[in-house]
Length: 480
Image 1 (cartoon, rainbow, N blue to C red):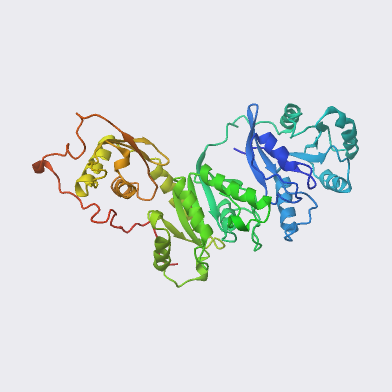
Image 2 (image 1 turned 90 degrees about the horizontal axis):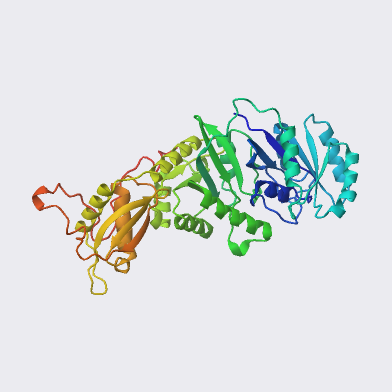
């Protein structure tokens, strides 16, 4: 099913991104007084009565980009106009008609599509007579709105609906997104190239200029009958290196994208060492308990270096994330790009899985027998039982005689055991400890079956509360 598209265009600094966020009902696009902040197409799905519209924000027409990306920005605007069913021509109601407004109007007159002239910043009715001069541009009705003061939204929504193409009888609600992917990493690691390759279209600007992407851009695409959402984020820098508010907003949106995602793809440049920024991003992913993949891009530039050598380097750098699988790709040529999507689906399936309470308690009992928790505060820690309370991430609640008695090292041991034995091999597990004061209830150690009924006990842990690493197909691809 094709969702109709409403595209917002206009000269710089007329409030296009403010209007976009206002109609969407949430902050998506970066809003800043600096001209030319928006570069890529930023889109969202907007419900209007019984229909859905893809609302698209674009860069300012006629902007002189400071990084010499004007041609790429104009290319994205042209692609947006080609896909539009309705065009929202945004002007500044307080400033009146400027030369660049007339230039935009001349460009739009050659397009045979419904156009609505939206006079933004009409905060009060007193501004409307001044804004009425935009009727001279001859681009349809002029709607007086104020994104800041929440004026004129219902009327504007009605005009958009009236100008949409007739609804197909088969048209229903767009398919639910099967998987949301956040693509994060330092600047110039090839995130935007990867997105374009996944979407099989020129969806975001690709440039050698660091910091090209500023917004977090949602890109919907379909594969094998499923709808996916890839979130392209701005390259992250050290906080002390942020030069302006725009970079600060980009960092905040990258973190929000991680929180929104089902799976996070953390990008590395194969030619660069892991930096402090990479470690901070990995730590944030770890704190959010998000399934992740370490994606090493530009691998073609390092062949014939064995992938195992790079894998060992990343494992040593991120010891607390030793369960995270790796992918070695070349986004520019598309090498292994679709394999990453398949792996991400596999991780999401793992994170959505549930285990029975019986299996969970059996595994915990065997783990505790293999390596009992050490005494603390002259007390013996006891685990009565456990249950899975949720998914995405798998959330385990452990009932004990005192949460403070199980230190972090032992908790990590239990988590690793659960991960290995219950098929959560590549995803994080969230563990909660709860106090259970029931003297008559035996602990898991005390409820162990008699020796003659025991099955051969697997080796779990050891003197170091860890696990023996197994060779996983998803961990490292063969050398390419």
